[in-house]
Length: 424
Image (cartoon, rainbow, N blue to C red):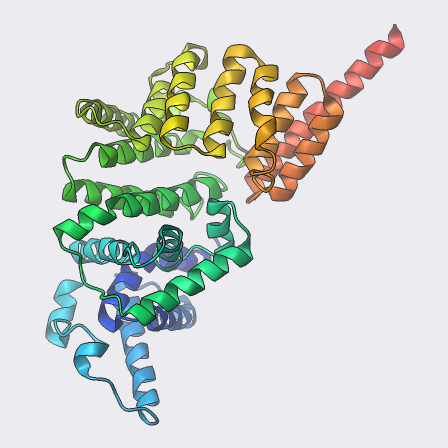
C-alpha cells in the first residue's frame, strides 16, 4: 500500500457513515456532500503528518459539520439565517454528539439514508442512482455502467433527483414501519448494486472496492434484522455471502482473474457458505419465491459442487429460466447462456447471446462471453473482434488482462493450426 493509499481506503470506508450523519444534521444533500468533501480535503492535508485518527468517520463528521456551519455563517452575512429547526436536527446537541457517534448509530444513519433516497416521490431509477452516488460515493461512470446507460443520461437522472428532493422538501427522518415496507424493494436493489460495483471493480483480493462488498453485506444483515420474516431479504443476504465467499480465489498471485471453474475451492470461505445455505433453506420454506432467492439458489449450486465437473448445470439452466420470468433482463439471459454452453455446447449458447447485441453493446461481459463462444467454435477472426471490443470496455486491469490472455491463446492456436496445414 502506498503512502497515501491508506487515506483513500479510510475515506472510502468512512463515507457512508459520515454522509449519513451529515445529511441527518444539515438535511440538505448538496450541503452534506460539500461538507464531506471539505472534510476529505482537510484529511488529505492533516493525516499524512499526524497519522490516522482513532475513528476516521467520527473525525470526518466533526470536521464536515464544522465546515458546513462555517459556510452557513458566511452566507448569513448576505442572507437571513433560517430557523435552527430547519438547519439541523435539534437532538444533535454538542453534549450528546460524542455518545451518538458509535457503530449502531452509523448503521442507523446509513440505512435511514437509503430509505430517504427511496422516497416514492422520486422515480425508481432516480431513487437508486441517487443512493449509489450519495451513500457509496460511486462515480457517475460507475453508476451508468450498473444501469447500462450513458454517463450523460445518468448525470441527468442524479441532477433531477437532487432537484426533486430539494423542491419537494422531502423530510430526512426515518420512515415509519409502513413506509419502510413500501420502500423495501428499492433499498434491497440499492444494496445489491453497491455489492455488484465492489465485486466487479476489485483488481484483486486486496482491492479497496472489497469494502463496498463488506458494506453491502452489513447493510443487508441490518435490513434482515428489520424484516426477519422476509424471504427475499434472506435471499439477498445469502446471495451476497455466497458471492463474497469466493473473494480469495477470484484472483491469482499476480492479480489475474481466475474463472469459477478454475478456482481453488479450498480458498472459499466455508463459514460464509454454511451460513448462506442455511439462510436459503429457511427462505425457501416460506414458499414465496423471488429474484434474489433464485440467484442465491444458483450460487448455492456452485458452492455445493466439490469439483467443477459436479456442477448441476441442468438445474442452473432451469433456475435462470425462472429468473427470466421473474425479472426479464438481457444480463440474466447472458448468464443463462453460460449454463447452456455447458449443457448443449457453444452453438446453442451463441444463439441466445447474439440477439442481445443491441442492448448489451456497451457491456464488457457480453463481448467477453461472445468471444469465448466464437473461439470454441473455431471462428477465430470473429472471436478476435469480440475480444478487442471487450478490452475497450474493461473496467479494471484484471478484466483487460484476462481478455489479452484469451487473445494470446487465440493467436497461439491459429499459429499452430497454420503450421499443421503447412506440413500437410
